[in-house]
Length: 495
Image (tube, rainbow, N blue to C red; front, side):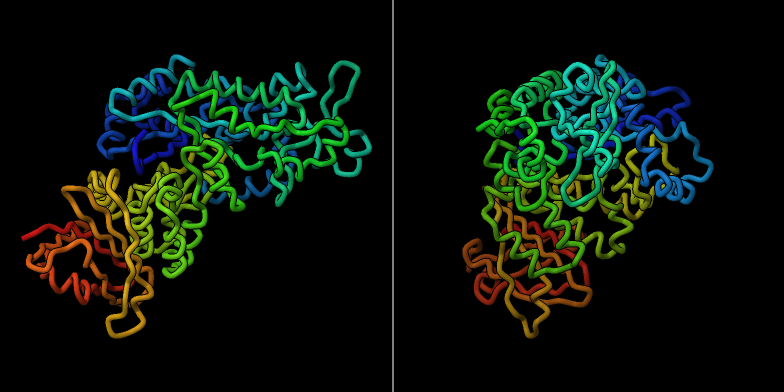
């Protein structure tokens, strides 16, 4: 497994549609032009996450169109995709009818071909796994209805939005819709019942089958199936089946069953450390994203003070399919500061389809087509430079240390975040100003530099060189001055 790797998330259905229009033919994962795989290699990504390759649910889409969410999406589509048709709405990639490839994406052979093309370029393939729920037309609905949380007709009458009615012969089942306890139920889902130990076993087997075709999975809302969270969320279901949860967490069993397989957790509610301990290789770091949006340097610094072993297993990002486009959230200056920081701290660094091109339009999950956006040349140039810098071994296998910033005449040093990466051959110092105004501070390098040498500080981000004495930087500290939301990435070498 790579250290501090780069992950690129691609909305598979949208991407293949774009390629089909570009090349004037139907493109699936089996016939993506080689040059498109080469581009991913040129950007030096370690993993590619093809998001949304599994079979989407026709019934889920029908139910979604009957929900209050559909009028909201229609109004949104009118503004972002004028002239859209029903063919542009494919349904949610997280309402999975079966863990078989969506026909619009391709076949199993096509998925395996994509994996091989990535493998030839030194890139590993990540796919999706949704442990909490299935689509309402998944085969288990009829073959194993006991795999699902079920209510009664009175339950349904009291809260019809929380259940799906399913006719099974002469019987009517009232299957609970999946939900996050803080939001309304998802209209296009059916809630799995982890009080039934067979569900635990069946989902582990499903993932084993998926694992034959990829190198890892991103697990949707992974914390929802933690025993205590599930029990709290579905206590009434436990009473109806008179069962307790299995003693082991499902993630423990999955980790034992799939050694070496990459597990990435989407997770919130302070469950990050716990999921790491249960075997996840990487867990979302939504806190850093929120702190960068707030441009709170002291809070970012406190967040980065956690032990490095923990931070190296976090997924850092400023954009993904659930969050709005970073180019719409941050103005240009703030965006570059946030991108520089998340790209150069420990952990897995996640970049989303369209982020590098500076796209501003968020892609609603049910869509298979989006409005074409002209790439922003300045965004592409910035990310090209940043990713070429981050390619250095120092940012992957180096030792990382958060550095303290000290005053240099005023209080503006509080807006600076600084840290050092070191290998036997390289030393990289990153300083980011998360404030809107000019900031200055001193950063002591007394443990790293010798008094009797001069050093060249090459700012790789801005193309400037500075010569400073080791004695000064080891004593009073390196004096750094940055305009608002600007950054340095120094390569430090003896002169």
